[in-house]
Length: 339
Image (cartoon, rainbow, N blue to C red; front, side, top):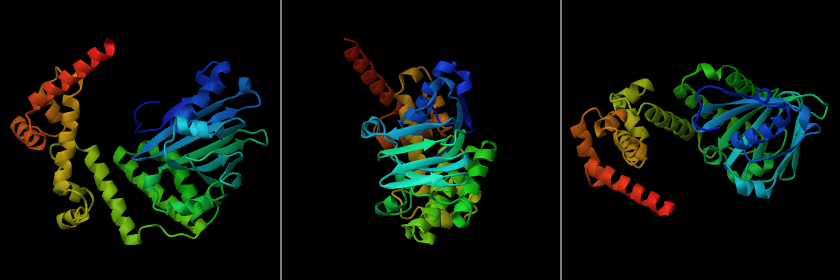
């Protein structure tokens, strides 16, 4: 499981030999969600399938599988921790989750949250039936709720049949069903929406308010949308503050105001990300024969002279000299490691 998919990346145990399907599922879950230990009553008869969808900095996963028990131990946490809150929605069958003194028994439409940095246990299919779960993976630094209050909702049942819970459950279900039809830019926006909806739903459960006031939260979401747009279109030489403002239905003044409290202006952000991309590619040994002008054009610099001047101003040397120095260091490190 490498790379970031822009559509559902489907996976099925049926592609494996029957004796390998349970181990395959354990490895896939560890790669997509987090390192986890599983036990099944009959591993030889186990079957599963799943998929994942990238939503910018957020990810949505969907799994259906046979009855099993799972746990995440301190050792597994040390082995790998994505530092996320993961919100599960049961769409078929039943499941339970236990963490931090809480235990949630979930049927269809029920949801529960867990913290990947803490041990937990879970189980599914206590009635002998398969279960299907949609999991929203939210980086902790993206959750606009006080972290010290989140313990109150870990492994506590979040009903998905009324109010914000129903809205969130419906949104996640529709996103899993139709997200593959969206562009990467649209998926990034939908990911931000999912985080905001999840935060609002959980805030109702713990009696907390989002850290940011509504106006601040809207500004925060818009800024993330703009940054995602810049990242996606960074190779377009026509990318400019004017284009960004038009695509987001903003005036240029509003766009510049959005970046007023940021470390750099929107134009400086575009220039820095382009130069960072060029610098990274110039240091890659596998691209050493690629003309510098091609590298520059790939990152939105169609004019080699303009690029060279901007690169020298940013890094204190010409692109050609930087590439020679970076590749020289790489060769030296390879020789040392090979001795």
